[in-house]
Image (tube, rainbow, N blue to C red):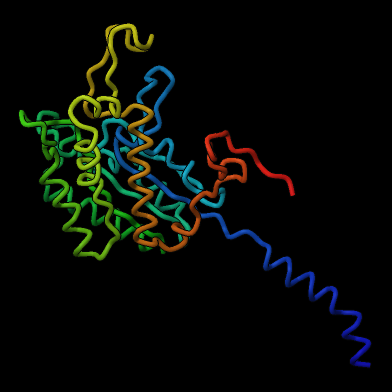
Length: 272
C-alpha cells in the first residue's frame, strides 16, 4: 500500500521541489537618498546625469533601484520636505538605503539648506537607525568630489569636514561605507586636468540646444561621468560583499559575452 502511495505522490513532490528550486529570489529595493549629483534629471537639463540614473543597469532584475535623491537638498531639507518618512514607511526587510549628502549641507552661503557638520552627523545617524529599525540595510557614502585641481595638476579635496563626519558615523555605528569622495578624486587624477572635463557637464556654446551658451560645471556629471561614478559604487558593493546585493550583479547576455575581436577578426558566435 505504501509502495502504491509513493508511486502516486512522487511526481507531485518532485514538481514542488523543482518549483521552489527554480523560483527567482525575492526582489529587493535599493533606495537612493541624496542631492543633485545622484538625482534623476529631466529632459531639459540633458546631458546632465546623476550617478543614480545608470545604477540599475549594473544589477539584475531582482534589484529595483528607487532613486529619491533631489536637486539642492541637504540632510535637513530632505527630511523637512517629508521625503524621508515615506521611505521609512515603505521599507521592507532586506531593502537597502544608500545615503550620500554633503554638497548642500556644506553651503554656508545658502542658509536655507546649510547644515553644520555636527547636525549633519546627527541626521546621518537618524537615517541609519530608522533604516535598521525596519530591518533594512543602510550604506553611507561620502560626498562625491567636485572637479578641482591645484596649479600642479593635483586634485584638491572639496568635502573634508563632511566626508570625515560620514566616516565617523560609519565607524561608530558599524555601517558599510563607500568612500566615493576618495575614489572619485583618484579617478579624476587618473583622467587629468583636461580629460576629467569629459566626466562633468562641460559644454562649449552650440554643443547642445539645452545650453546654447555652453556650460562650465564642475559638480554635475555628463553621462560618462555618471556611469563612472556608479561603477565605483558598484565596485564597493562587490568588494564588501554586501548581503543580498553583491550576488545580484547583472550578467552579460551570451552575445555580449563574446570578445569583439578574436584573432584579428570580428568574433562570431559558434553554432553547436
